[in-house]
Image (cartoon, rainbow, N blue to C red; front, side, top):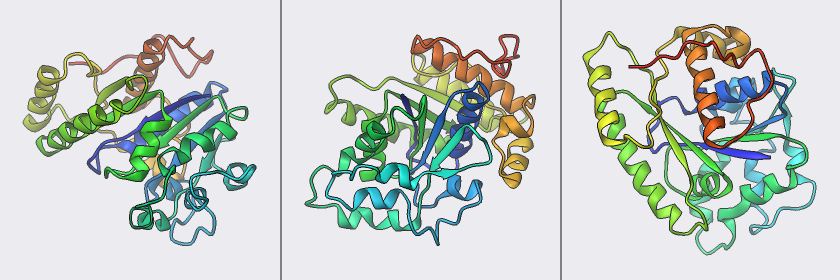
Length: 275
């Protein structure tokens, strides 16, 4: 199983949308995909029609066993989604109290890694939607992953959040055997605004080696897909944003030397939004 995290230390930059867009494309290609919602706000959980305020069992259950994961518990927590090839490990608002509970408890940083080890035979890919705060949940996401996607909205305040995220990653890498590779992905780009144009130029100047040299444009079809509870590729596979996400997926797979999934949904002729 290949494990990717989607994270940034700022909310509203497109983390959940990016997770679902990539997961949907992989699932359309016939891959068995698990999405893991580690954000206490539960946006991805809500996306698929579950209420994080009333979930009796969620990712929170995984953290209640002193860092060890009872055999079979992760599978019991899986829930169906609107896509037949995607399962979700849902979030609940109870995750918000983990930071207060975690001091003094050993092994909590590897809970998700151990969880995914139990599920490794059931899925081809796991994509983790991380919360926008540095804490035990984000540490879990980064510790479990082999690749990190950092969405960043093309506006000035989001660039400050990106600086914090890159510094966090440097700190996390000091405790890993191997540095976590990552791609910075410009999102919510609107070429009609000077703010977006300036932010994109700043990203290219400051992060030339790790920046994906394209962008995800603003696209109301993504919002429409969320209203219907469908992964974006199932709602409108040829929308401007999905053409860009398809190119992003190909970029990530190429960096990981992963053979491209055999699917018409990952189209080699897709147009890439670039600047």
